[in-house]
Image (tube, rainbow, N blue to C red; front, side, top):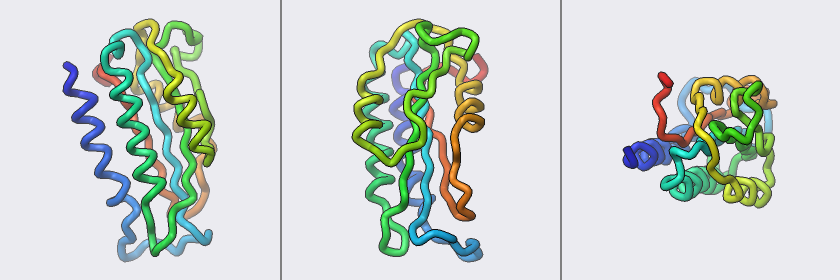
Length: 159
């Protein structure tokens, strides 16, 4: 079972470069630099005990790739949000999901929050975590904004 986060992270790392590539027919971007909004969702249930450090490291690698990406010679306006889910210290009424950091360009704050997260509990609902990220975040309204959610966990979406 420990191969899932590695495989998931490996598949996701390839997305940033391809996603920022300009394709014919793109609507003109309104801003001076491309907007990139990314939501990171991390399973902090006990089933991640042996995998949590690796998952955090892989998510941070994704953020670093976006921060270094360029489009038309310019780095994007990158904002990243962080959610944790599956931790029984979180309110059951909110599906054991917590928005740790809203969309921000402060990557230092994001890094500190990400690497502080600890495992506890065991009620994780991947689909609900994705739905909450879609609903709660103030996603960019720019016409060509790249918006992505990266989720790191080891439970199936059918749980």
